[in-house]
Image (cartoon, rainbow, N blue to C red; front, side):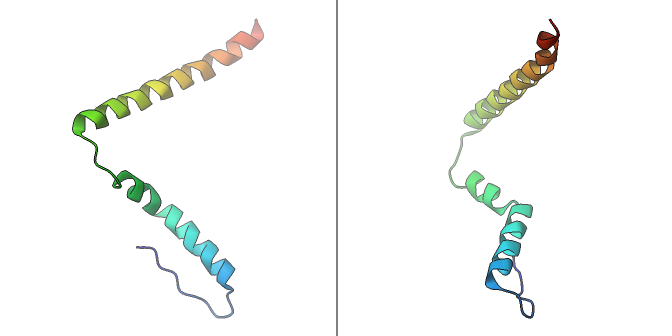
Length: 71
């Protein structure tokens, strides 16, 4: 759990900024979103493979883009 302690003379805005940064570093929000609903193992596998296909497709288009500009 993310905790911060107010330092002497620190404004609430800066403390809130530090807290938000700490929450992002600890991936608390990502974890909450992942546990917010249940996915069956088959659904997890389909989503994982779909994301892998998307990454590979994006990688191929990035690799082939410089070749097309030379032609």
